[in-house]
Image (cartoon, rainbow, N blue to C red):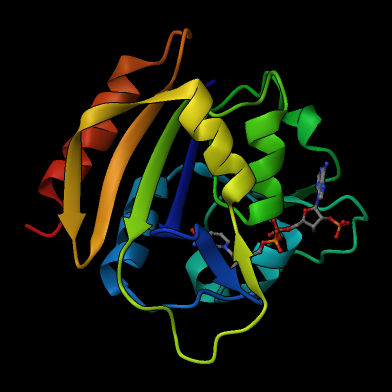
Length: 189
Ligand SMILES: NC(=O)c1ccc[n+]([C@@H]2O[C@H](COP(=O)([O-])OP(=O)(O)OC[C@H]3O[C@@H](n4cnc5c(N)ncnc54)[C@H](OP(=O)(O)O)[C@@H]3O)[C@@H](O)[C@H]2O)c1
């Protein structure tokens, strides 16, 4: 199993959300997220799951992390609820950690389920005016900067710079890294 984490954070303050939504609208970033997770198992928290448009998740494999088990899934064939992230240790398939802040922090700080690959998209543009209840990924970025190294290539599209990071000292599945880099090299072209 390879664990891939993917996010879009705001440059400087590492904000990723406002309430249950995003504080920006960047169609190419939404498309990148959709394409990189296509056909993969996404793992997300109950708040993120509830805040995403249903049409984005319908027909896609999703594991919803929810300790209380109160999340009702709307696609019973493809979505399941798991009450403890640690249960995903040694999962037989690749997992794509898709937020939000609580779920990233759990994966970045729990031995055995730390992401192997991080697709780090950093947005340098403005945040929506009047956005409140801002949520950041500072804790996860601290771990990223200490325990991961950035590959030298960066990719820029619509004000978002994407860098791929790999976990230091661990074997990382190179074919998957290559596939992600190939997508980033050709996206938008
Ligand atoms: N920019 C991006 O890339 C991006 C991506 C995804 C999400 N977001 C944003 O992130 C924000 C949501 O983040 P959030 O931190 O509020 O919520 P979240 O991470 O989506 O969800 C938190 C969930 O985690 C569950 N949980 C807590 N500890 C757990 C554990 N040990 N095992 C299993 N489940 C556990 C909680 O369950 P209980 O309720 O039972 O405690 C809760 O349902 C939104 O603003 C969203 O738009 C941004």
